[in-house]
Length: 182
Image 1: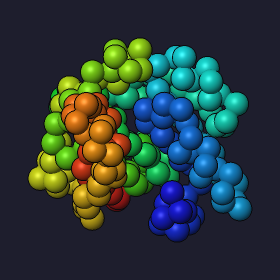
Image 2: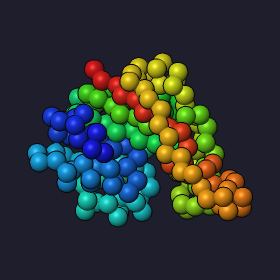
Image 3: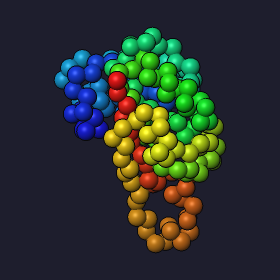
């Protein structure tokens, strides 16, 4: 997050699509010295109810059908969302984000990572249904694409008895980061 603070020094309206717990924008909002407007969008109402006091605005909406005017957002964060949409929905979302935002930051697992959300989150929207690669992001106009890996070395006992663990948590998988800007 400290990198984001230096990469976006002058942006004032920040949109987090699929904001979940809202912590990304909440952290950003309280760690900058200037006034910013933090807007969180998610379809899962229980999360929005929890975070409405943390952000300036929360909107219950589908990422593929966002209620914002063209050029109304400085930076849109599309963090770990597109893998929860069909490819067509994600492409529609990105086309729309390119109309409303000056910059878009995207992160997604590199390739398909199995995540059956009913087992862990009780939120069917968390299930992964599509896969994305560096080439896909390039074709969508994203640049500066980098891979990063949060893979945690599991203790041997966990590796032995829980070999499926990395497939259920994207934070343990290799991810891609990219940026689009006008």
